[in-house]
Image (cartoon, rainbow, N blue to C red; front, side, top):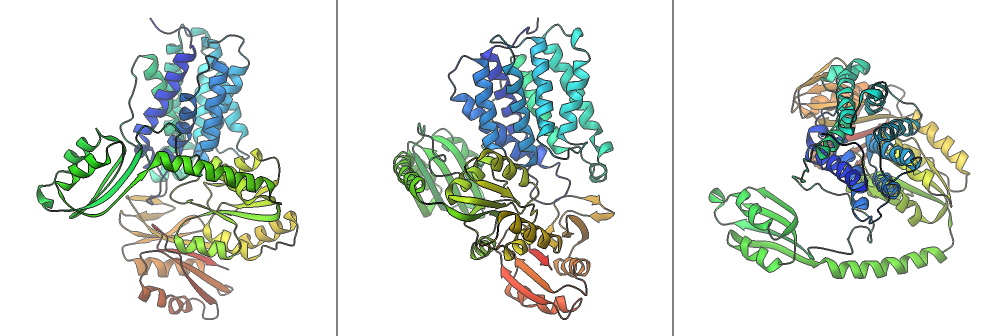
Amino acid sequence: MGVKSIDVALFKKMVTNGAINLKNNHGEIDQLNVFPVPDGDTGTNMSMTVTSGIRELGNCESSSIIECAKVLSRGALMGARGNSGVILSQFFRGLYVGIQNIPHNYLTISDFMACLESGCKIAYKAVMEPVEGTILTVVREAAENTAKNLDKFQTIDDLLSHYIAEAKKSLANTPNLLPVLKEAGVVDSGGAGFLKIVEGMMMALNGEILEAQQEMGEAPKTAVASVDANIKFGYCTEFIVDLKNPDAFEEKDLKAVLSLLGDSLVVVRDENLLKVHVHTNRPGRALEIAQKHGEFVTLKIENMRLQHSTLKEGAKATQEQENTAPKKHFALVACCFGEGIIQTFKDLGVDYVIEGGQTMNPSTEAFVEAIKKVNAENVIIIPNNGNVVMAASQAASMVKDCNVQVLKAKTIAQGYVALINFNPEASMEENLEAMQEQIANVTSGELTYSIRDTEIGGVKITAGDYMGISDGKIVVSTREKNDALRELLRKTITPESEVITFFCGSDVSKEDREALEDLCQEFNDEADVEIIEGKQEIYSYIIAVE
């Protein structure tokens, strides 16, 4: 028969189903990362973005479709992570803009088409230099080619079915628009994530309501935002068990039992040690079940309801202090990861560090909160990651009571050398100019490992290889870490290089650190070598060559 119009209840079902479909398949989207490094996170970012919107929508009791679209848009906007996540949040903002122009409390076929076109229009506006072959192309071509056939559609089902078919064709063509996709043998991950959402919406139209198959980690938020006032399972229960019979232990059986006691269940095993995290109202029962399998090494139980009450009061007092405290002239906010890197950035004057970047892109909301926390007249955000710049810029545009600018630092190395040139006595314009100039004079290097076979930029890569990346390009891939490092340094160090700074990862030994200066002298025996224990994961070395 088909659906002729979308009312509030169906609108909620469709977008929620779309979010769940992406969430259930976010790992597949993550794998479409062009670079074969273990930090592909487009699916995760997009899923967290739309889930943030759905969470707010779930708390909206309004019967107005305009109000529901507004709440969805705002939630996605604040939860936006990564470039694809920011673009997705702007698509949902476009839906809201389109719905605002509709005089009735439902969407007809033509109304729905207008909303999809509005979503495309607003998404494009959010990007200063749109690149074709990305999620933007998929959103645009699906809307344009569906609108051409609007007169043929008798139901919403007809329209959305056609829209999905056009989106699939557009997605399949993305490698022909972006050579790097073709070379890596993948389609655009942002476009693929978007397709999962609209496919989930179509399922809801057909009566197929999905359930989330897995929990996905959420990035840390501010104290009050991190705990729901209406906590369903009140005790955060964590423990490590030394298994008495590791060979006979079945992880899935324990998961099945514990899942009945609560949510947020995580079970991780390392040989004879088993780590468990669960939110439950019966922590004693969870411990009793676990103790049958061995002896506790550590255990911790926290009452989240009490924590919430305490944190809320503390946050209220802190907010009152912040509201009365005089504003500083300047403050710096940076996004980075690794204990040593974070401390280095703080030592260089950063007032507030948002932990994340390469492996977890922070949300727009995280940047907004950071800007408020530093309480300054002028704020410079240093993203240190190209996939974080858009969320930072979106946050900067939302804060009206101070001057916020985003430094276009796209690597840890760029942010590090830029900070050295920050002058708290200079103006915002002078600082940005000096810091950006320093960024132009640094070469960034990273050494990491590959998670799949591919070929990029003429470099053949095998899963397990160590890869050297110089200014965003893979320049070497080989089996031995030291060989990869030597070739990376050959590509990044020049006779004119004056300072070479290494941020050493958690996997770098003392002996390896001590050998770095001699290794650099093979290519430049006059440059100063600085070594910092960054303690970051995934990247053995992050290098700044000035």
